[in-house]
Image (cartoon, rainbow, N blue to C red; front, side, top):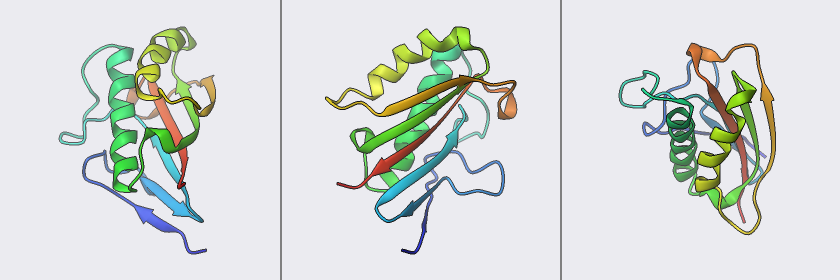
Length: 128
């Protein structure tokens, strides 16, 4: 099994020495996405819901580059700068993940996120 790098201009470029995503053995591992607008490289304007929406659009762009969709995601990890944003992020998250089998998930408050973001989400997707 040889890992394959997945990259798209429709999601933010990596802000460090990592790939947007890597596929190995039919599983796609998407690096944590923060709410950067791909066209500008800047954080999206707006509240935590606007940030969560941008993050999930970025995840979606990477999924699309891999030939997958939100329904192929089996696991996510949500990192929050403030756990008080949990419900607001859930509301946005529930608009992207709607299938009969929702991804397994963990959510944590962290001390800080890159670039001052309020939310970061990583995902794992599997080819059917």
